[in-house]
Image (cartoon, rainbow, N blue to C red):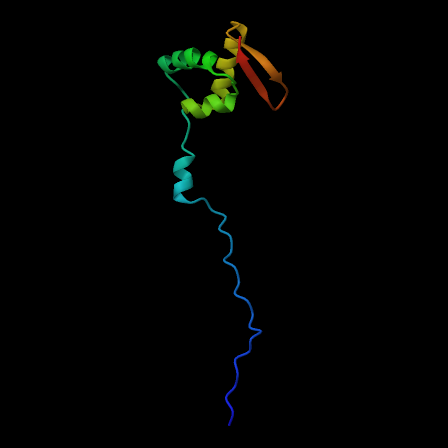
Length: 99
């Protein structure tokens, strides 16, 4: 009896399903930001921010590991003191530059 040939039109292997959870490595990258910050950190932010070429709340929050809501308050105060000025102002994006 002749041997059966394996069919060449076998079904392709299925791709692995996408994992929708967050891995441990990604959890470490997205660390909690401080809600309450100390006065010395506020002072360093006030000194460093006017030296930056372009200032956005997200850049400052990422650099100093502080919540964006706190950074927005600090940037508003700096703008009132004329240390920085508004370059682009819209609902979604606020960009400041040194005064």
